Image (cartoon, rainbow, N blue to C red; front, side):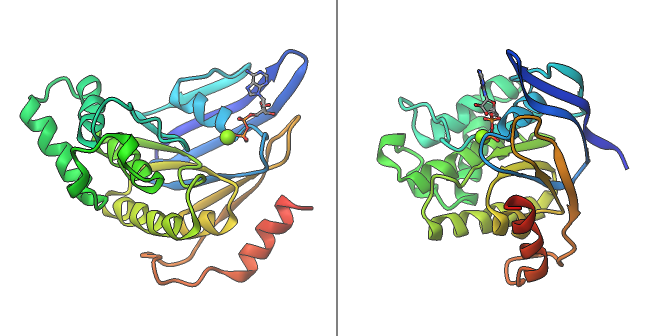
Length: 238
Ligand SMILES: Nc1ncnc2c1ncn2[C@@H]1O[C@H](COP(=O)(O)OP(=O)(O)O)[C@@H](O)[C@H]1O
Ligand SMILES: [Mg+2]
C-alpha cells in the first residue's frame, strides 16, 4: 500500500516553546484519517504542513498528490457568487479547462451538495451551512488527490452539522480519495474515519493513540461503537 502522506519525526516550535514533540504519521492512499485532540495541540499546524502552507521545525514531510483544504471558516471570496467561488478555485488548479467546462464542473458540484438553486448567490446571502457546502464543493471540484479538512463543521449547528457529515461521507464513499480531517468531536471522528489519531495536549503534543475504526460502510445508518467512544473520551480527558 502506498502512502499519500508521510510525516517523519516532525516537530514545531515557536520561540522556545515546542508545540509538537517528534511525531510520525503515515496515511495510506485512499484512507480517511481523523486527527483528534484538544484545542491548541497542533492539529491545524500539522494540516498546514501537509498542505504546504507551513513547515516543520525539524523532521520530514512527504506528500504524494495534490491537496485541497477546507477550513472551518470556509474562506469564500465575498465578491464572487457560489458558482464563481468554485470556478475561481478551478482556474488556478485546472488551467486546461475552458470557461464552459469550469461552469459545468462548478454546477455539478453545487448540485452534489444540494445548492443548484443558489449558484448565483454571493456568500452574504448564504447561511453558514450553505457556505460550508460551497467550501466542500469547491474542494471536491478540483479533484484533489488529498482532501484536508480543518474542523469543517465546527461553526455549524448540530442538525446542519449532521447533514453535512453525511453528505461528506457519501461524496467520499463514491471515490475514496485520501482525507485527513481535524476535529475535536469524538462522534464525528467515529462516523467518518477509517483511522483516528489521538493527540495529547501542547506543549510537546504528539500522537498518543492510532485507532482503527472497523465499523461497516456505508455508515449512514450504523450505530457508533460505544466502547470505542468511551475509549476516545478517556484518551482526550484523562
Ligand atoms: N504564529 C504563532 N506564534 C506562536 N504560537 C503559535 C502560532 N501559531 C500557532 N501557535 C500555537 O501553536 C499551538 C497549536 O496551534 P494549532 O495548530 O492551531 O492548534 P489546534 O488546531 O490543535 O487547535 C497553539 O498553542 C497556538 O497558540
Ligand atoms: Mg485548529
